[in-house]
Length: 72
Image 1 (cartoon, rainbow, N blue to C red):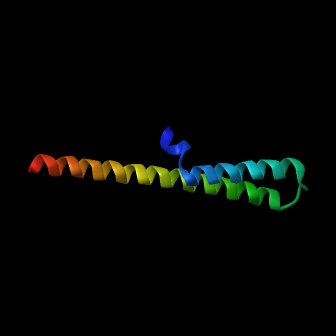
Image 2 (image 1 turned 120 degrees about the vertical axis):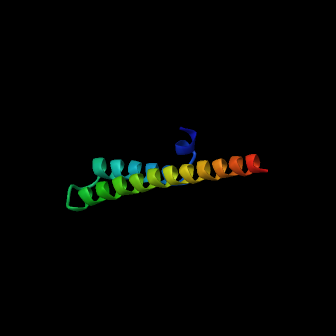
Image 3 (image 1 turned 30 degrees about the horizontal axis):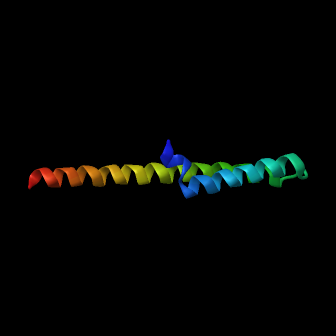
């Protein structure tokens, strides 16, 4: 859970989501509102995907490191 909370991409996507919420509440209702929500959702999905990918790569590096130490 910590890897999600302290990741810069997640924090940036959360700030963007907050901005979208505020703009939806206080701004005019026109064709840009759905586009803002789509943008916020895509940004959040990409950020979560990046964290998952980084986590997967780190665990693979760790397992290769453990295997290398056992092979010595």
